Image (cartoon, rainbow, N blue to C red; front, side):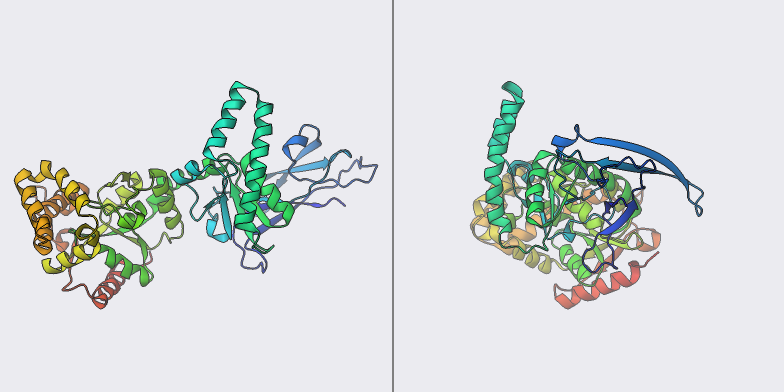
Length: 463
């Protein structure tokens, strides 16, 4: 009897006690002519690249009508016989289909990005670690040799360097791991680089998957998701002037179980001239690709029937752009405008920008120079004097009133024009279809927690 052909679907299965993989078993039909006189078993395994041309495969296609749907399903039945001179390696490496709705990198213990370090830095699958089988320099050297010298010589050098790097990868990441470790491996296109590590890990005995199409397919899927699936979500925008601790309210919402997207956290920027994130060492923001990946990964975990709470932003956060469809849907959603007393705004700003009062004073003065075109040289000089005299409360209030508050008013009219009366330009009240207003007296945890509870009760309703 012919053995079964196993194909992998990335849907989770609660009924499986040993794995979250869901398997579909398609029986390979027996060859009616029974040409296997030597008794060899027919097997439908993916072949290594070096044996594909030598393989002998016969294909039959049959049509089956499903009684319940009336549709015709085309069933492919491949009867494959390994020639006796080839080694049957068996089914060892599964396929992780990133285009599947059920793909989740968190279902693996390790996701290995075997591309070069610069490719990984530009963007990678969330939670992936960098395990390059070739460095940037090695990859460039082999590529040049492939084009200018000879492909065969390039492959020999590539194999040598890859083998050396695989040894380092195993020592650093795998020697301490148990056999039950689930590993997913990918490169740019799902070719030689990913299969080199996947092959070694599978021969050791790890549970290994690789991504057909590699990062290229993942990026395609991410862009498609942000363009098409993002349109299905509803957003509630938490707006308000700089220093109102909107991020704190989002944190309180998320702790209560709300669906929250913190765009500034994904962008590693606080959305202003002084908004560089000190937590990343001022090394700059992630690439647009990385921002997209973080956003799409978070959204895939959300329920389309519930609202998403998000902070009101301009379309650009520093150097990265909110995807067009997400930005559009944010503008169409309801908004709540948060406000707190000025003294608490000043306190919140000083807490979160403390570095500008200590180690980063020169950086602050450099940033203030950028604002001369917006507020004038005279006012910026006044701010420089306040910084020099360490009058921080006065400085923060001045820059809030004369720069940030004005910028907020202008940005609000651009991003949410429906919240303003066309004739007067004044903001509409909630009873006129405008945004709701939420005033909080202080920055206490219980104050923001209660506000989060009230927002969820009012807006987080399953449709």
